Image (cartoon, rainbow, N blue to C red):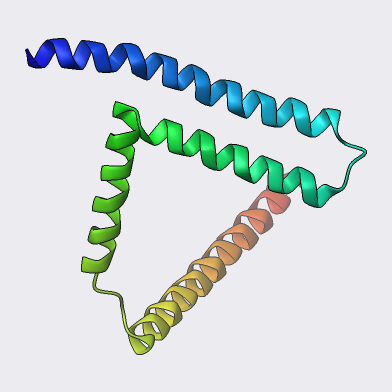
Length: 122
């Protein structure tokens, strides 16, 4: 019985995706057709169409999965232990110092190799 419900849902999902694509197409074509009208009205119309298309997309299986993933990602972000201002400043200082040291080493190596090559060629 569960497979029958899933297959019926997937048939309607295809129709819903067609509706989403049609709404987005209407928005793009309508925006170009009504280019002479106020930008405010076109933006409002595009936002309304995008919201309706998003609502229809969320009614599909993939839309539910995306929304679930979004909620789980949001809860995972809350679990992250963010560094303090002092830790961030120290890490930044270390990175800057290491970059400067490596830059000076590469500059010295480049100068040395340039000096050797000019001595051989020159």
